Length: 561
Image (tube, helix red, strand yellow):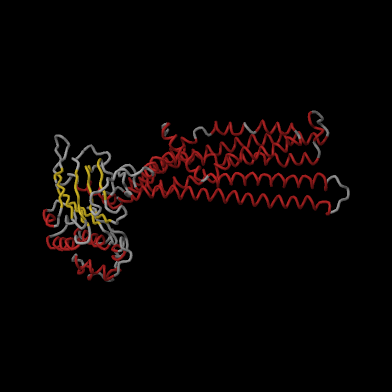
C-alpha cells in the first residue's frame, strides 16, 4: 500500500521529533563511534609497524624491540572496546527513552477512553501499535541514526590516513565507496512500500485471528472451524510472502555491497602485491613500503565495514517510517490540548453541554442535550431498543468520543465501572472474577454483595465456595445469574461512578427487586448512570434522558429531557 505524501511527511516528522528529544545521547553515540574508529586505526597501525618494521625486516630481533608496538596495540584495543561499549550504551539509552515516551503518549490517549475511536482500531490494532510499531523504533534510533553518520565520517578518517600513505589507493577506495549506497538505493527503492504492506498485513492477520478466537464458541456451533482455519492459513501465507519479499530485498542489498567491496579490496591488494614484487613502478609505487602496504591492506576491509553496518540498518529506517506513519495520527491526538470540557458552573456535578452522542461513522445525529447531574444522583437513559441509549452511555464512559458538544466530570481522574449488556467471565474462580476490579476485596465483602444479590444459595451449592472454578465454556449459569454476578463484581469496585447498561434485562421479578434495592442503597454514595427501557427503573431516577424511536423516513431520533 502506497501511503500518500501527507502520511509520509507525518511519519518523517515523528521520526525527526523523537530524534530531537534524544539528540545529546545520540550525538554522544556518534562521537564515541568515531573514537572507536580511531582506536581501530591505532590498532592496525601498531600491528603493521610490528610486522613491517620490527619482525619481518630484522634478521635478528629481540622482544624488547616489539614492546612499543605491542603496548600501542593493547592501548588501542582497550580504547576501541571502551568506545564501542559507550556508543552502544548511549544509543540503547536513547532508544529506551524514545519508546517509553511514545508509550506514555499513547497511554495518555488511552486514558481518555480505552477505545475512544471505536471502529477505527481493533484490539489487535492497538496491541500492534503498543508492541510491534513502537519496538520498531529501536532499530531506527539505536542503530540506523548513529550509523548514517559513522558510515560517512569513519571511512573519511581511514581514507585520510591511506591518502597520506598512498594517494592512488585512496582514490580507488574513494571511487568504490559511492557505488555501494547508489546501488543499495536502487535495489531498496521498494523497501519502504514493502514494509508498509508488511505492517498492514500483520495488523490484519492479528485482528483476523483475534476475532476468530473471540467467536470460537460460535464457530464451533456453526461447524465452521475448518473454514475459519483455512482463512487464517491463507492470510498467514500472504504475510509469509511479504516477509520473504522483505528478506529478498535485504539479501540483494547485502550482495551488492559485498560485490563492490570485494572488487575494491582485491584491486588494492593486487596493486600493492605487484608493487612489492617490483612488477609495477608507475604512479606512487615508490612510496609503498612493507609498513605502508600492510597498513593499507589492513584498513581496506575496515574502510567498508561502517558502510556494511549501515546497510544492515538501512531497512530499520523503512520499517520505522512505516510504523511512524501509523503512529503519527494517534500521537498527534494524544498531544492535542483538551478544549472539549467547558468550565462547569457546579464543580460537584456532571455537566452535559450541547452533547451529541453517536459513533464516528454513524449518519444518525440525535438532538444535543444540556443537563446537570449533581453528585450521588441517578441519571436514567430510557427509550426503545436501538434509540441510542448504549451509545450515550459509552460516550459518558469515555469509550467513544462525543459527536458534538462536551461533558465534564468533576474529577477528571475519578474511577468508574462500566457494566455492558453482554456480561462476561474469565477463566478462573468465583473469587478471581469478583476481584477483577477490586483486588483487595475480602471474602466477607464478596459474600456480603453476593448475599444482597441473592447469589449466596447458588454459591453454597458449589463444592469449593469462592474457590470454585468459573469457566465460561463449561459453567452452567443462567443469563440472570451471570448478570447478577457481573453486577456484584462492579459493586465491589472502589468507584465513584457506576454505568449500567440494561442491568435488569435478564432478571425475573424477584431478582429484579434485589438489584433495585442494592442500587437504591448505592445511590447515596455513588453516581448511577443507567441505560434501561425497564419502567421499574424510573423509581431510582433523579434525572431522565429519554430517547424516542428512530424515524424511518428521516433517519432522525429525538431526545427529550
